[in-house]
Image (cartoon, rainbow, N blue to C red; front, side, top):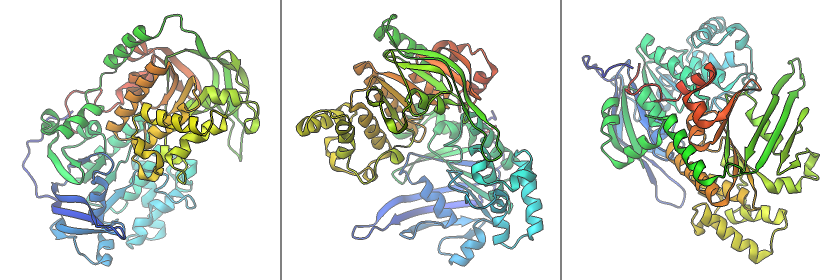
Length: 557
Protein backbone atom coordinates (compact mmCIF):
# COMPACT_ATOMS: atom_id res chain seq x y z
CA UNK A 1 0.00 0.00 0.00
CA UNK A 2 1.12 3.54 -0.66
CA UNK A 3 1.89 6.01 2.04
CA UNK A 4 -0.31 9.10 2.36
CA UNK A 5 0.16 11.51 -0.56
CA UNK A 6 2.24 14.52 0.40
CA UNK A 7 2.77 15.83 -3.15
CA UNK A 8 1.83 19.36 -4.25
CA UNK A 9 -1.92 19.85 -4.52
CA UNK A 10 -3.28 20.26 -8.05
CA UNK A 11 -6.27 22.23 -9.22
CA UNK A 12 -9.46 20.16 -8.86
CA UNK A 13 -10.97 18.69 -12.00
CA UNK A 14 -14.39 18.24 -10.37
CA UNK A 15 -15.89 20.56 -7.78
CA UNK A 16 -19.26 20.30 -6.06
CA UNK A 17 -20.16 23.40 -4.06
CA UNK A 18 -23.20 23.25 -1.77
CA UNK A 19 -25.14 20.87 -4.03
CA UNK A 20 -28.72 20.05 -3.03
CA UNK A 21 -31.10 17.78 -4.95
CA UNK A 22 -34.83 17.21 -4.51
CA UNK A 23 -37.30 14.73 -5.98
CA UNK A 24 -40.93 15.66 -6.51
CA UNK A 25 -43.70 13.11 -6.03
CA UNK A 26 -47.22 14.00 -7.16
CA UNK A 27 -49.39 15.02 -4.26
CA UNK A 28 -46.51 15.14 -1.77
CA UNK A 29 -43.92 17.72 -0.75
CA UNK A 30 -40.59 17.42 -2.57
CA UNK A 31 -38.05 15.15 -0.84
CA UNK A 32 -34.50 16.40 -0.44
CA UNK A 33 -32.11 13.49 -1.08
CA UNK A 34 -28.84 15.46 -1.27
CA UNK A 35 -28.38 18.39 1.09
CA UNK A 36 -25.60 21.00 0.80
CA UNK A 37 -22.75 18.71 -0.28
CA UNK A 38 -19.34 20.16 -1.18
CA UNK A 39 -16.50 18.04 -2.58
CA UNK A 40 -13.55 18.31 -4.93
CA UNK A 41 -11.55 15.75 -6.93
CA UNK A 42 -8.15 16.18 -8.56
CA UNK A 43 -6.81 14.44 -11.71
CA UNK A 44 -5.05 11.14 -10.97
CA UNK A 45 -6.98 10.67 -7.73
CA UNK A 46 -9.80 8.39 -6.51
CA UNK A 47 -12.55 9.82 -4.32
CA UNK A 48 -14.88 7.25 -2.75
CA UNK A 49 -18.48 8.21 -1.99
CA UNK A 50 -19.53 5.84 0.80
CA UNK A 51 -22.95 5.24 2.31
CA UNK A 52 -25.85 2.84 2.56
CA UNK A 53 -28.78 2.61 0.15
CA UNK A 54 -30.72 5.86 0.27
CA UNK A 55 -27.73 7.90 1.42
CA UNK A 56 -27.70 9.94 -1.80
CA UNK A 57 -24.39 8.72 -3.22
CA UNK A 58 -25.75 7.46 -6.57
CA UNK A 59 -27.93 10.57 -6.88
CA UNK A 60 -24.82 12.69 -6.44
CA UNK A 61 -23.09 10.74 -9.22
CA UNK A 62 -26.09 11.26 -11.53
CA UNK A 63 -26.09 14.94 -10.66
CA UNK A 64 -22.56 15.17 -12.04
CA UNK A 65 -23.49 13.33 -15.25
CA UNK A 66 -26.78 15.23 -15.62
CA UNK A 67 -28.87 12.06 -15.71
CA UNK A 68 -31.26 12.64 -12.82
CA UNK A 69 -34.75 11.21 -13.24
CA UNK A 70 -37.36 13.58 -14.65
CA UNK A 71 -38.75 14.32 -11.19
CA UNK A 72 -35.33 15.20 -9.79
CA UNK A 73 -33.74 18.64 -9.88
CA UNK A 74 -30.77 20.49 -8.46
CA UNK A 75 -32.17 23.13 -6.09
CA UNK A 76 -28.91 24.55 -4.83
CA UNK A 77 -25.17 24.71 -5.44
CA UNK A 78 -23.00 24.17 -8.49
CA UNK A 79 -21.11 21.35 -10.26
CA UNK A 80 -17.93 22.39 -12.08
CA UNK A 81 -15.78 20.25 -14.38
CA UNK A 82 -12.40 21.63 -15.42
CA UNK A 83 -13.51 25.17 -14.58
CA UNK A 84 -16.74 24.87 -16.58
CA UNK A 85 -19.99 25.00 -14.64
CA UNK A 86 -22.29 22.12 -15.59
CA UNK A 87 -25.29 23.09 -13.49
CA UNK A 88 -28.02 24.55 -15.65
CA UNK A 89 -26.37 23.70 -18.97
CA UNK A 90 -28.86 22.98 -21.79
CA UNK A 91 -29.30 19.24 -22.37
CA UNK A 92 -27.58 19.43 -25.75
CA UNK A 93 -24.43 20.82 -24.15
CA UNK A 94 -24.63 18.30 -21.30
CA UNK A 95 -24.75 15.46 -23.83
CA UNK A 96 -21.56 16.82 -25.40
CA UNK A 97 -19.83 16.45 -22.01
CA UNK A 98 -21.48 13.19 -20.92
CA UNK A 99 -19.78 10.14 -22.40
CA UNK A 100 -16.95 12.24 -23.83
CA UNK A 101 -15.39 14.03 -20.86
CA UNK A 102 -17.24 11.96 -18.23
CA UNK A 103 -17.29 8.18 -18.42
CA UNK A 104 -19.81 6.14 -16.40
CA UNK A 105 -19.73 2.51 -15.21
CA UNK A 106 -23.09 1.25 -13.85
CA UNK A 107 -23.51 -1.23 -11.01
CA UNK A 108 -25.18 -4.13 -12.81
CA UNK A 109 -23.11 -5.14 -15.83
CA UNK A 110 -25.87 -7.20 -17.46
CA UNK A 111 -28.49 -4.47 -17.05
CA UNK A 112 -25.98 -1.95 -18.41
CA UNK A 113 -25.69 -3.82 -21.71
CA UNK A 114 -28.27 -4.32 -24.45
CA UNK A 115 -28.89 -8.09 -24.78
CA UNK A 116 -29.69 -7.72 -28.49
CA UNK A 117 -26.42 -6.12 -29.61
CA UNK A 118 -22.84 -7.47 -29.75
CA UNK A 119 -20.78 -6.04 -26.90
CA UNK A 120 -18.18 -4.62 -29.30
CA UNK A 121 -20.81 -2.45 -30.98
CA UNK A 122 -21.99 -1.23 -27.57
CA UNK A 123 -18.48 -0.44 -26.36
CA UNK A 124 -17.98 1.77 -29.41
CA UNK A 125 -21.29 3.63 -28.99
CA UNK A 126 -19.78 6.66 -27.14
CA UNK A 127 -17.36 7.14 -30.06
CA UNK A 128 -20.25 6.98 -32.54
CA UNK A 129 -22.52 9.25 -30.51
CA UNK A 130 -19.85 11.96 -30.32
CA UNK A 131 -18.72 11.53 -33.93
CA UNK A 132 -15.17 10.67 -32.90
CA UNK A 133 -14.49 7.71 -35.17
CA UNK A 134 -15.64 5.88 -38.27
CA UNK A 135 -17.09 2.37 -38.01
CA UNK A 136 -13.72 0.83 -38.90
CA UNK A 137 -11.89 3.09 -36.45
CA UNK A 138 -14.38 2.24 -33.71
CA UNK A 139 -13.81 -1.47 -34.20
CA UNK A 140 -10.04 -1.05 -34.04
CA UNK A 141 -10.26 1.17 -30.94
CA UNK A 142 -12.66 -1.16 -29.11
CA UNK A 143 -10.57 -4.26 -29.79
CA UNK A 144 -7.53 -2.40 -28.44
CA UNK A 145 -9.51 -1.39 -25.34
CA UNK A 146 -10.74 -4.96 -24.82
CA UNK A 147 -7.12 -6.06 -24.82
CA UNK A 148 -6.22 -3.28 -22.36
CA UNK A 149 -8.93 -4.32 -19.89
CA UNK A 150 -7.75 -7.93 -19.98
CA UNK A 151 -10.33 -9.61 -22.22
CA UNK A 152 -8.82 -12.61 -23.95
CA UNK A 153 -9.40 -13.05 -27.69
CA UNK A 154 -10.79 -9.50 -28.09
CA UNK A 155 -11.58 -10.11 -31.79
CA UNK A 156 -14.04 -12.84 -30.77
CA UNK A 157 -15.38 -10.94 -27.77
CA UNK A 158 -16.23 -8.02 -30.06
CA UNK A 159 -18.94 -10.14 -31.73
CA UNK A 160 -20.19 -11.82 -28.51
CA UNK A 161 -23.51 -11.03 -26.82
CA UNK A 162 -23.78 -10.16 -23.09
CA UNK A 163 -25.35 -13.52 -22.13
CA UNK A 164 -22.30 -15.31 -23.55
CA UNK A 165 -19.94 -13.56 -21.11
CA UNK A 166 -19.41 -13.80 -17.36
CA UNK A 167 -20.26 -10.94 -15.01
CA UNK A 168 -16.62 -9.95 -14.75
CA UNK A 169 -16.22 -9.94 -18.53
CA UNK A 170 -19.34 -7.78 -18.94
CA UNK A 171 -17.98 -5.33 -16.39
CA UNK A 172 -14.73 -5.09 -18.36
CA UNK A 173 -16.76 -4.33 -21.50
CA UNK A 174 -18.47 -1.46 -19.67
CA UNK A 175 -15.12 -0.12 -18.48
CA UNK A 176 -13.84 -0.24 -22.07
CA UNK A 177 -16.96 1.63 -23.22
CA UNK A 178 -16.53 4.26 -20.52
CA UNK A 179 -12.87 4.75 -21.47
CA UNK A 180 -13.39 4.75 -25.24
CA UNK A 181 -13.52 8.56 -25.53
CA UNK A 182 -10.56 9.04 -23.15
CA UNK A 183 -12.61 10.93 -20.54
CA UNK A 184 -11.05 13.06 -17.82
CA UNK A 185 -13.49 11.87 -15.15
CA UNK A 186 -14.80 8.35 -14.56
CA UNK A 187 -17.81 7.69 -12.30
CA UNK A 188 -17.90 4.07 -11.13
CA UNK A 189 -21.23 3.33 -9.42
CA UNK A 190 -20.79 0.18 -7.28
CA UNK A 191 -18.76 -1.42 -10.11
CA UNK A 192 -17.93 -4.63 -8.22
CA UNK A 193 -20.89 -5.24 -5.89
CA UNK A 194 -22.26 -8.29 -7.73
CA UNK A 195 -18.87 -9.84 -8.52
CA UNK A 196 -16.80 -12.58 -6.90
CA UNK A 197 -14.07 -11.29 -4.59
CA UNK A 198 -11.28 -12.37 -6.92
CA UNK A 199 -12.98 -10.73 -9.91
CA UNK A 200 -13.66 -7.67 -7.74
CA UNK A 201 -9.96 -7.37 -7.00
CA UNK A 202 -9.10 -7.71 -10.70
CA UNK A 203 -11.56 -4.98 -11.69
CA UNK A 204 -10.33 -2.61 -8.97
CA UNK A 205 -6.72 -3.30 -9.99
CA UNK A 206 -7.72 -2.42 -13.54
CA UNK A 207 -9.25 0.88 -12.43
CA UNK A 208 -6.07 1.65 -10.44
CA UNK A 209 -4.02 1.10 -13.58
CA UNK A 210 -6.27 3.40 -15.64
CA UNK A 211 -5.89 6.15 -13.05
CA UNK A 212 -2.11 5.94 -13.18
CA UNK A 213 -1.81 5.61 -16.96
CA UNK A 214 -4.34 8.28 -17.96
CA UNK A 215 -4.15 10.76 -15.07
CA UNK A 216 -7.82 9.91 -14.65
CA UNK A 217 -10.01 11.21 -11.85
CA UNK A 218 -12.37 8.54 -10.46
CA UNK A 219 -15.50 9.03 -8.38
CA UNK A 220 -16.00 5.58 -6.83
CA UNK A 221 -19.50 5.00 -5.42
CA UNK A 222 -19.59 2.13 -2.89
CA UNK A 223 -21.39 0.97 0.25
CA UNK A 224 -18.29 -0.85 1.54
CA UNK A 225 -15.86 1.30 3.50
CA UNK A 226 -13.38 -1.59 3.31
CA UNK A 227 -13.23 -1.28 -0.50
CA UNK A 228 -13.00 2.51 -0.23
CA UNK A 229 -10.20 2.35 2.35
CA UNK A 230 -8.15 0.02 0.20
CA UNK A 231 -8.64 1.79 -3.13
CA UNK A 232 -9.34 5.49 -2.62
CA UNK A 233 -7.12 8.49 -1.92
CA UNK A 234 -9.98 10.31 -0.23
CA UNK A 235 -13.29 9.26 1.30
CA UNK A 236 -16.58 11.12 1.65
CA UNK A 237 -19.26 9.51 3.83
CA UNK A 238 -22.92 10.32 3.11
CA UNK A 239 -25.90 9.68 5.39
CA UNK A 240 -29.44 10.73 4.52
CA UNK A 241 -28.10 13.02 1.81
CA UNK A 242 -25.68 14.91 4.04
CA UNK A 243 -21.89 14.75 4.18
CA UNK A 244 -20.97 13.47 7.65
CA UNK A 245 -17.22 12.86 7.18
CA UNK A 246 -14.64 13.52 4.49
CA UNK A 247 -10.87 13.59 4.20
CA UNK A 248 -7.79 11.62 3.25
CA UNK A 249 -8.39 7.89 3.48
CA UNK A 250 -5.88 7.20 6.25
CA UNK A 251 -7.36 10.04 8.33
CA UNK A 252 -10.96 8.89 7.98
CA UNK A 253 -10.08 5.28 8.83
CA UNK A 254 -7.89 6.22 11.80
CA UNK A 255 -10.29 8.86 13.13
CA UNK A 256 -13.87 8.23 11.92
CA UNK A 257 -15.12 11.22 13.89
CA UNK A 258 -18.82 10.35 13.94
CA UNK A 259 -20.93 7.32 15.01
CA UNK A 260 -22.18 6.52 11.50
CA UNK A 261 -18.69 6.30 9.98
CA UNK A 262 -17.60 4.17 12.93
CA UNK A 263 -20.56 1.85 12.28
CA UNK A 264 -19.58 1.52 8.61
CA UNK A 265 -16.04 0.70 9.65
CA UNK A 266 -17.18 -2.03 12.05
CA UNK A 267 -19.46 -3.56 9.41
CA UNK A 268 -16.96 -3.38 6.56
CA UNK A 269 -14.26 -5.82 5.56
CA UNK A 270 -11.55 -3.44 6.76
CA UNK A 271 -9.40 -5.12 9.37
CA UNK A 272 -11.16 -8.43 8.70
CA UNK A 273 -9.79 -11.36 10.66
CA UNK A 274 -11.13 -14.61 9.35
CA UNK A 275 -9.21 -16.49 12.03
CA UNK A 276 -10.90 -14.54 14.84
CA UNK A 277 -14.34 -14.97 13.27
CA UNK A 278 -13.87 -18.70 12.71
CA UNK A 279 -12.40 -19.20 16.20
CA UNK A 280 -15.36 -17.45 17.83
CA UNK A 281 -17.76 -19.56 15.77
CA UNK A 282 -15.93 -22.75 16.76
CA UNK A 283 -16.16 -21.89 20.46
CA UNK A 284 -19.90 -21.17 20.16
CA UNK A 285 -20.48 -24.48 18.40
CA UNK A 286 -18.89 -26.40 21.25
CA UNK A 287 -21.29 -24.68 23.66
CA UNK A 288 -24.52 -25.21 21.72
CA UNK A 289 -24.16 -28.32 19.52
CA UNK A 290 -23.50 -31.81 20.95
CA UNK A 291 -20.56 -33.61 19.36
CA UNK A 292 -22.91 -36.51 18.51
CA UNK A 293 -25.65 -34.33 16.97
CA UNK A 294 -27.48 -36.37 14.31
CA UNK A 295 -26.66 -35.99 10.63
CA UNK A 296 -29.53 -34.18 8.89
CA UNK A 297 -28.17 -33.76 5.36
CA UNK A 298 -25.99 -36.34 3.63
CA UNK A 299 -24.76 -36.59 0.04
CA UNK A 300 -22.80 -39.44 -1.50
CA UNK A 301 -20.97 -39.19 -4.86
CA UNK A 302 -23.41 -36.66 -6.33
CA UNK A 303 -22.73 -35.51 -9.89
CA UNK A 304 -24.66 -33.33 -12.32
CA UNK A 305 -23.82 -32.61 -15.97
CA UNK A 306 -25.71 -30.24 -18.24
CA UNK A 307 -25.90 -31.54 -21.77
CA UNK A 308 -24.35 -29.89 -24.81
CA UNK A 309 -26.61 -27.21 -26.23
CA UNK A 310 -26.46 -25.14 -29.44
CA UNK A 311 -22.84 -25.88 -30.20
CA UNK A 312 -21.64 -25.59 -26.61
CA UNK A 313 -19.86 -28.45 -24.88
CA UNK A 314 -21.46 -30.32 -22.00
CA UNK A 315 -20.70 -28.83 -18.57
CA UNK A 316 -20.20 -30.89 -15.42
CA UNK A 317 -21.51 -28.53 -12.73
CA UNK A 318 -20.98 -30.92 -9.77
CA UNK A 319 -18.64 -33.90 -9.68
CA UNK A 320 -18.63 -36.68 -7.03
CA UNK A 321 -19.73 -34.46 -4.13
CA UNK A 322 -19.83 -36.20 -0.73
CA UNK A 323 -20.41 -34.53 2.66
CA UNK A 324 -22.72 -34.47 5.68
CA UNK A 325 -24.21 -31.74 7.87
CA UNK A 326 -25.17 -32.21 11.52
CA UNK A 327 -28.27 -30.74 13.14
CA UNK A 328 -27.88 -27.18 14.38
CA UNK A 329 -24.71 -26.49 12.38
CA UNK A 330 -23.87 -24.49 9.27
CA UNK A 331 -22.06 -25.78 6.22
CA UNK A 332 -20.63 -22.86 4.29
CA UNK A 333 -20.37 -23.56 0.56
CA UNK A 334 -18.00 -21.14 -1.13
CA UNK A 335 -16.80 -20.70 -4.68
CA UNK A 336 -16.74 -18.27 -7.56
CA UNK A 337 -19.45 -17.94 -10.20
CA UNK A 338 -19.64 -21.16 -12.18
CA UNK A 339 -18.17 -23.28 -9.38
CA UNK A 340 -21.34 -25.38 -9.06
CA UNK A 341 -22.49 -24.21 -5.64
CA UNK A 342 -26.00 -23.16 -6.69
CA UNK A 343 -26.49 -26.33 -8.72
CA UNK A 344 -25.48 -28.39 -5.69
CA UNK A 345 -27.96 -26.79 -3.31
CA UNK A 346 -30.78 -26.96 -5.86
CA UNK A 347 -30.21 -30.71 -5.94
CA UNK A 348 -30.32 -30.77 -2.14
CA UNK A 349 -33.64 -28.91 -2.19
CA UNK A 350 -35.16 -31.34 -4.69
CA UNK A 351 -35.28 -28.72 -7.46
CA UNK A 352 -33.32 -30.94 -9.80
CA UNK A 353 -32.15 -34.54 -10.06
CA UNK A 354 -28.49 -35.65 -9.85
CA UNK A 355 -27.17 -37.85 -12.64
CA UNK A 356 -25.46 -40.11 -10.10
CA UNK A 357 -25.22 -40.36 -6.33
CA UNK A 358 -27.68 -40.05 -3.45
CA UNK A 359 -28.97 -37.26 -1.21
CA UNK A 360 -30.84 -37.78 2.05
CA UNK A 361 -32.49 -35.29 4.39
CA UNK A 362 -33.50 -36.57 7.82
CA UNK A 363 -32.81 -40.07 6.55
CA UNK A 364 -35.27 -39.74 3.66
CA UNK A 365 -33.98 -39.82 0.08
CA UNK A 366 -34.40 -36.63 -1.92
CA UNK A 367 -36.02 -37.59 -5.21
CA UNK A 368 -36.83 -34.92 -7.77
CA UNK A 369 -40.42 -35.03 -8.96
CA UNK A 370 -41.52 -32.75 -11.75
CA UNK A 371 -43.94 -30.04 -10.64
CA UNK A 372 -43.26 -30.97 -7.04
CA UNK A 373 -45.39 -34.09 -6.91
CA UNK A 374 -44.48 -36.31 -3.97
CA UNK A 375 -42.16 -33.73 -2.43
CA UNK A 376 -44.48 -32.05 0.09
CA UNK A 377 -42.67 -33.47 3.17
CA UNK A 378 -39.30 -32.38 1.78
CA UNK A 379 -40.51 -28.90 0.86
CA UNK A 380 -41.72 -28.42 4.42
CA UNK A 381 -38.44 -29.73 5.88
CA UNK A 382 -36.11 -27.83 3.51
CA UNK A 383 -36.69 -24.18 2.65
CA UNK A 384 -34.64 -21.77 0.48
CA UNK A 385 -33.73 -18.11 0.96
CA UNK A 386 -32.60 -16.43 -2.26
CA UNK A 387 -30.12 -13.65 -3.02
CA UNK A 388 -32.52 -10.93 -4.13
CA UNK A 389 -35.47 -10.53 -1.74
CA UNK A 390 -37.24 -8.11 -4.05
CA UNK A 391 -37.28 -10.64 -6.89
CA UNK A 392 -38.26 -13.57 -4.66
CA UNK A 393 -41.28 -11.88 -3.06
CA UNK A 394 -44.60 -11.13 -4.77
CA UNK A 395 -44.78 -7.32 -5.16
CA UNK A 396 -48.59 -7.46 -5.38
CA UNK A 397 -49.02 -9.20 -2.04
CA UNK A 398 -48.83 -7.70 1.44
CA UNK A 399 -46.34 -9.02 3.96
CA UNK A 400 -49.20 -10.79 5.76
CA UNK A 401 -50.29 -12.57 2.57
CA UNK A 402 -46.72 -13.59 1.81
CA UNK A 403 -46.30 -15.16 5.24
CA UNK A 404 -49.71 -16.86 5.20
CA UNK A 405 -49.14 -18.45 1.78
CA UNK A 406 -46.82 -21.31 2.89
CA UNK A 407 -49.09 -22.00 5.88
CA UNK A 408 -52.08 -22.38 3.57
CA UNK A 409 -50.04 -24.38 1.06
CA UNK A 410 -49.05 -26.92 3.72
CA UNK A 411 -52.54 -26.79 5.31
CA UNK A 412 -51.19 -25.60 8.64
CA UNK A 413 -53.82 -24.26 11.05
CA UNK A 414 -57.02 -22.32 10.53
CA UNK A 415 -57.48 -18.62 9.84
CA UNK A 416 -56.92 -17.51 13.45
CA UNK A 417 -53.95 -19.86 13.89
CA UNK A 418 -52.31 -18.45 10.76
CA UNK A 419 -52.86 -14.87 11.92
CA UNK A 420 -51.13 -15.68 15.23
CA UNK A 421 -48.32 -17.44 13.36
CA UNK A 422 -47.75 -14.36 11.19
CA UNK A 423 -47.43 -12.23 14.34
CA UNK A 424 -44.92 -14.75 15.75
CA UNK A 425 -42.88 -14.73 12.54
CA UNK A 426 -42.71 -10.94 12.45
CA UNK A 427 -41.59 -10.90 16.07
CA UNK A 428 -38.92 -13.60 15.73
CA UNK A 429 -37.38 -11.89 12.67
CA UNK A 430 -37.38 -8.45 14.29
CA UNK A 431 -40.03 -6.86 12.06
CA UNK A 432 -42.57 -4.36 13.44
CA UNK A 433 -46.14 -5.65 13.46
CA UNK A 434 -47.18 -2.55 11.52
CA UNK A 435 -45.40 -3.88 8.43
CA UNK A 436 -47.85 -6.79 8.08
CA UNK A 437 -50.19 -4.85 5.81
CA UNK A 438 -47.53 -3.17 3.67
CA UNK A 439 -46.22 -4.20 0.26
CA UNK A 440 -42.61 -5.16 -0.32
CA UNK A 441 -41.95 -2.02 -2.39
CA UNK A 442 -42.53 -0.03 0.81
CA UNK A 443 -39.76 -1.90 2.67
CA UNK A 444 -36.01 -1.51 2.76
CA UNK A 445 -33.72 -4.23 1.39
CA UNK A 446 -32.99 -5.52 4.88
CA UNK A 447 -36.67 -5.61 5.79
CA UNK A 448 -37.48 -7.50 2.60
CA UNK A 449 -34.83 -10.10 3.38
CA UNK A 450 -36.27 -10.50 6.89
CA UNK A 451 -39.68 -11.10 5.30
CA UNK A 452 -38.08 -13.73 3.04
CA UNK A 453 -36.58 -15.44 6.10
CA UNK A 454 -39.89 -15.24 7.98
CA UNK A 455 -41.65 -16.85 5.02
CA UNK A 456 -39.34 -19.87 4.93
CA UNK A 457 -39.68 -20.27 8.71
CA UNK A 458 -43.48 -20.37 8.47
CA UNK A 459 -43.95 -24.16 7.94
CA UNK A 460 -41.37 -25.04 10.61
CA UNK A 461 -38.44 -26.34 8.52
CA UNK A 462 -35.38 -28.09 9.86
CA UNK A 463 -32.99 -27.09 7.06
CA UNK A 464 -32.52 -23.68 5.44
CA UNK A 465 -30.65 -23.36 2.17
CA UNK A 466 -29.40 -19.77 1.93
CA UNK A 467 -28.20 -18.82 -1.56
CA UNK A 468 -26.09 -15.62 -1.31
CA UNK A 469 -28.64 -14.15 1.16
CA UNK A 470 -26.63 -11.03 2.03
CA UNK A 471 -24.62 -10.26 -1.11
CA UNK A 472 -27.19 -7.75 -2.42
CA UNK A 473 -27.34 -5.83 0.89
CA UNK A 474 -25.41 -2.93 2.41
CA UNK A 475 -22.65 -3.97 4.80
CA UNK A 476 -24.48 -2.77 7.91
CA UNK A 477 -27.63 -4.62 6.82
CA UNK A 478 -25.50 -7.71 6.07
CA UNK A 479 -24.36 -7.63 9.69
CA UNK A 480 -27.96 -7.44 10.94
CA UNK A 481 -29.08 -10.38 8.77
CA UNK A 482 -26.10 -12.53 9.80
CA UNK A 483 -26.82 -11.78 13.47
CA UNK A 484 -30.49 -12.67 12.91
CA UNK A 485 -29.60 -15.99 11.27
CA UNK A 486 -27.25 -16.83 14.14
CA UNK A 487 -29.90 -16.12 16.79
CA UNK A 488 -32.55 -18.10 14.89
CA UNK A 489 -30.22 -21.06 14.63
CA UNK A 490 -29.54 -20.98 18.36
CA UNK A 491 -33.23 -20.67 19.21
CA UNK A 492 -34.68 -23.18 16.74
CA UNK A 493 -31.76 -25.62 16.24
CA UNK A 494 -31.87 -24.96 12.50
CA UNK A 495 -29.41 -26.49 10.08
CA UNK A 496 -28.00 -24.15 7.42
CA UNK A 497 -26.39 -24.64 4.04
CA UNK A 498 -25.04 -21.18 3.39
CA UNK A 499 -23.78 -20.30 -0.09
CA UNK A 500 -21.47 -17.36 -0.75
CA UNK A 501 -18.60 -16.29 -2.96
CA UNK A 502 -17.24 -14.28 -0.01
CA UNK A 503 -15.04 -16.16 2.45
CA UNK A 504 -15.32 -13.23 4.86
CA UNK A 505 -19.05 -13.89 5.27
CA UNK A 506 -18.53 -17.67 5.25
CA UNK A 507 -15.99 -17.46 8.09
CA UNK A 508 -18.50 -15.71 10.35
CA UNK A 509 -21.49 -18.00 9.83
CA UNK A 510 -20.04 -21.47 9.20
CA UNK A 511 -18.99 -24.41 11.35
CA UNK A 512 -17.70 -26.38 8.36
CA UNK A 513 -16.58 -25.04 4.99
CA UNK A 514 -16.78 -26.73 1.61
CA UNK A 515 -14.93 -25.05 -1.27
CA UNK A 516 -16.05 -25.71 -4.85
CA UNK A 517 -14.15 -24.97 -8.04
CA UNK A 518 -15.34 -25.95 -11.52
CA UNK A 519 -17.69 -28.51 -9.96
CA UNK A 520 -15.08 -30.20 -7.75
CA UNK A 521 -14.76 -30.05 -3.97
CA UNK A 522 -11.19 -28.77 -3.61
CA UNK A 523 -11.21 -28.30 0.15
CA UNK A 524 -13.47 -29.29 3.05
CA UNK A 525 -13.16 -29.20 6.82
CA UNK A 526 -13.80 -27.25 10.04
CA UNK A 527 -14.08 -23.52 9.31
CA UNK A 528 -11.18 -22.64 11.59
CA UNK A 529 -8.85 -25.07 9.79
CA UNK A 530 -9.83 -23.89 6.31
CA UNK A 531 -9.45 -20.21 7.24
CA UNK A 532 -6.21 -20.42 9.24
CA UNK A 533 -4.44 -23.21 7.37
CA UNK A 534 -5.83 -23.53 3.83
CA UNK A 535 -4.59 -26.56 1.96
CA UNK A 536 -4.88 -25.10 -1.54
CA UNK A 537 -3.60 -22.01 -3.35
CA UNK A 538 -7.17 -21.36 -4.52
CA UNK A 539 -8.47 -20.84 -0.97
CA UNK A 540 -5.45 -18.69 -0.14
CA UNK A 541 -6.33 -16.56 -3.18
CA UNK A 542 -9.94 -16.20 -2.03
CA UNK A 543 -8.78 -15.08 1.41
CA UNK A 544 -6.28 -12.60 -0.01
CA UNK A 545 -8.97 -11.06 -2.24
CA UNK A 546 -11.11 -9.89 0.71
CA UNK A 547 -10.76 -6.06 0.76
CA UNK A 548 -8.78 -4.95 3.79
CA UNK A 549 -7.81 -8.48 4.76
CA UNK A 550 -4.30 -8.59 3.34
CA UNK A 551 -2.97 -5.22 4.46
CA UNK A 552 -3.40 -3.14 7.56
CA UNK A 553 -2.56 0.26 6.03
CA UNK A 554 -5.40 1.82 4.01
CA UNK A 555 -4.80 3.67 0.77
CA UNK A 556 -4.55 3.13 -2.93
CA UNK A 557 -1.52 1.13 -4.03
